Amino acid sequence: MKWKISMKTVLLLDDARSIRSVYAEVIRQAGFEAQTASSAEEGLRYIVDHGAPDLIITDINMPGISGMEFCKRVRHVAKHTPIIVMSALSDKGLVAEAKTFGVQGWLLKPVEPEYFLNKLKSILGETQALSS
Image 1 (tube, rainbow, N blue to C red):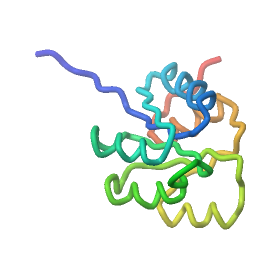
Image 2: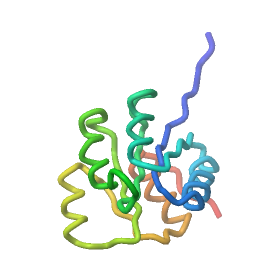
Image 3: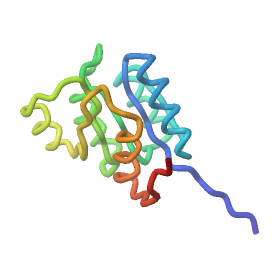
Image 4: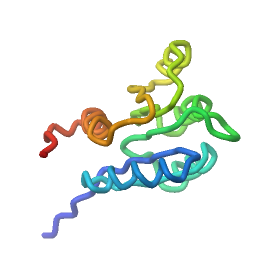
């Protein structure tokens, strides 16, 4: 009998290509599968086409559908998927609103890769500590 080990999938949404590239690489180096989207529309399409990922990380300030609206809409297709917001905005009202859509974390950009990875592992239930 062969066992298939499936990697946890993280969907990363950000309109900035450099952000997507850097953090997707951090996700991959940690042993997770990284999928990226440059807009909320693209992220929703990914979820509809491929199913809910294990974790969603989204920016708030994006063209088209905002990250906040994305969080609201994603609850219709991925009710239990954890969401982390990664944004340069730190408005307490936005943070409170995000929590009503089940957002489990708010990372303020720029995020140090080690802190980003610890948050990701914490939410995905990974207990392995980072080795230096």
